[in-house]
Image 1 (cartoon, rainbow, N blue to C red):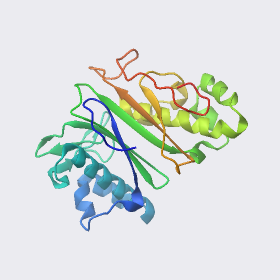
Image 2 (spheres, rainbow, N blue to C red):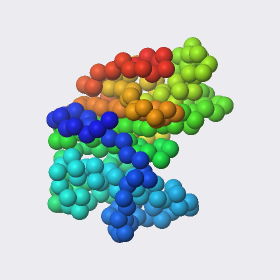
Image 3 (cartoon, helix red, strand yellow):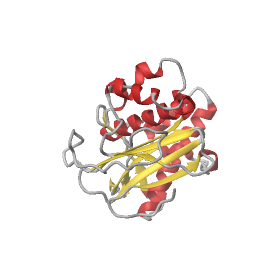
Length: 243
């Protein structure tokens, strides 16, 4: 999973958070909102992984744009809270103007998954999610996270594949809600992702068993809505789930 750039198409990269070299002035590189968020983490491991993920995203954006990372200033935007947040859609300013890319990132189990579209068509929206299968393996998950149709799909899977199926559905939901900007303000149990256009399961490299990932992409000119022009679904190995 590398970063070959094709105009208008998403490029993806996986990085191990422990391999991200964090500069001594790491907090300054994050921007004020993310600095404040980093300092709120109670555990040092969570704080370090948050910082490494943000540094990885900035360097990834710089590599795709072929600029020095120091020319990029973090500019995260939340559709509900507005610009200049410590959360929301990742973005950067380049030499004072918006950097020409859309970006999404997700951390899980010591990894960060990065996705971007460079010089995107107007209205392009993107979301990506990386999930640990174990995160969906608890009693009551189906009731709070899945639609009735999704629950039926999971139950039809062989018992050994059900938790993977649950995690794949959750990754699809997270990717979609990142793309739309709704986040978990929208009830995930009301969002059916079994066969929703614009969603793709991602095939992860060998050695990453226990993790699943999904990508959501839309080129809707006025935001995401039902029937919007979107990346067609791709049929991929997804534990027997439609995809």
